[in-house]
Length: 205
Image (cartoon, rainbow, N blue to C red; front, side):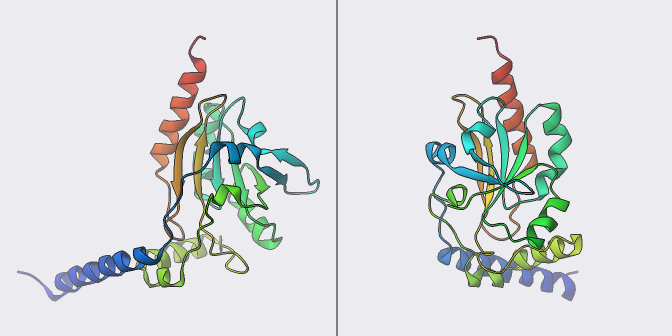
């Protein structure tokens, strides 16, 4: 026998899917990254001494997993260390307390991309209509409970993503672009890409 609760759940799921489909119309579609632009991007270190590095130097020998405004991948840090693949983070601005909070949940090095090349080629913003989506509020609540409250001031609605970039001429092995706040990358896909990268490196030349 179908209960009222079951019907309400089904209706709720249907409404959520309809809202998701409608809000997708207003969201800017991602344009895939240009490796050359990423390589030439100047990144600034965070912390006491502000050094500048060409992004390419961070992955040209070992490859790297690059998180753009995402802290969840810290759970993979030990597995990536076993593969000798560094995990680094890129943020768009250094906002003191927000950055300090981010570093509590991220175990790698953090760099600032002032030109937002890692957010492009076309910088994407989460439009206000996306706040109608249940998933967005669920992700915000999860982040709040963990104590990691993203910066919604200034340019806090800019969407990020994740890259797995191989050394040498391997190029971009995985690229994930956020569709909404808290849209997580598939962790297993990141590990598979990192392992694939290491296997290529270990092959005799």
